[in-house]
Amino acid sequence: MTNIAYLDCSSGISGDMTLAALVDAGVGLDALNVAVGSLGLPGLHLRAEECRKQGFRAVQVHVDCPPEHKHRNLEDILALIAAGRLTARQREMAARIFTRLAQAEARVHGVPVEKVHFHEVGAADSIADIVGAAVGFDLLGVERIAASPVPTGVGKIRIAHGECSIPAPATAELLKGIPLAASSVEGELTTPTGAAILATLVDSFGPLPAMKIDRVGCGAGQKDFAGQPNILRLMVGDAVEPENRVRACTHAGCESDEVAVLETNLDDVSGEIVGYSISRLWDAGALDVYTTAIQMKKNRPAVKLTVLCRPKDATAMEAILFAETTTLGIRSWTAARHVLRREPQTVETPWGPVEGKVSYLPDGTRRFAPEYESCREVAEREHVALREVYEAARKAYGNNASFPRSRVGTHSPDAPAS
Image 1 (cartoon, rainbow, N blue to C red):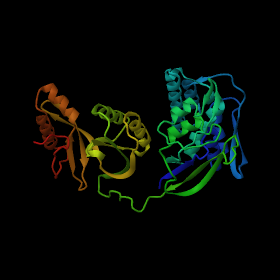
Image 2: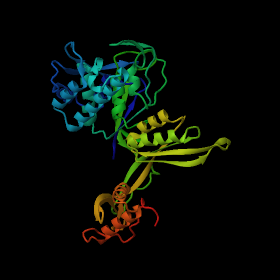
Image 3: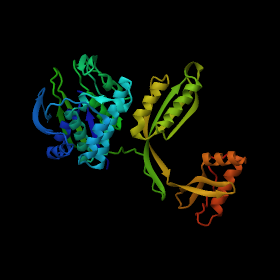
Image 4: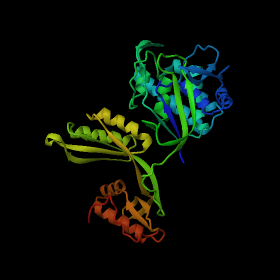
């Protein structure tokens, strides 16, 4: 079963709330102190205590450290993380969170990432919050993280650069593509540190997923709000597969996974915009992108833009669709996918090597498909027909005794009809 964590951010999220929720969910405070203590920051220590927020029990974590008068950049912080006694996964998660923070700050201030000087989030307590969060999720064995829409609060806040509206500029940048929840609470509910944790580690946003809850942790924020407890709830357990889930593939050589499917109807954008959007989606890691001609209301011709991607990339793909197209809504769902196992294979043709893929069919045989780009390069370089290169590549695979032959045909899905 998949070990899943769900962050109920009804009162927002901050680094210390995340750390406190992890401690309340069972992460040992001693283990966290060993990890953050290995970063080489003098006097850094975590302590936890129970408290009440609007009548609800929660844990509050305090970071004790001497006053500091220095600003760190990303290189400084990554060096601290690299020198700490952390596992590879803990180090990678903490580094990704800080890198995401640096990218947001760079965007806000219009400077290169390496020139960003962290102020509040570069202090020892924020470093402890982020590294502690990475260590905590790793110690819980969490494989997937989901979260609710997040409120930011309203009003003004004073930061190192002066007074600004909530959400703070870096927080707003980090929350791009993340669903926000309405809130009239005066004050900063979601901090840059909390937003960075969400933007970096959370795989999906929405209601509580189907899961068997094993433990619940309640992490308290420092402030008290009238009318609602300032608590971040963390629920950890096993994901429960729905009964109508598409069956897993049981054929030899066939693998199963899940993909996110996103689609939107577009009737008021130009072909150039659609084409550019598709390019951005591919560059962002989409597994497949395609359009379908449709007809919408008032007999308007339109296109349906469909994206297949890994579930963890769905939020980023939605952000691209909202930014680059005029869509007002995106439909999404998760689909089971059966995939033939495949591996790269190079064959020798009269004009040189051609790359391709060998796929493993359910009956145990194999099929070779030449790669279009490799065939195109050979055809253009040698001034021969693309069709001839495809045929030569398939023949080379079939004639080579060291390659297992397929008994069900060798036509490549990328090849033109012959």
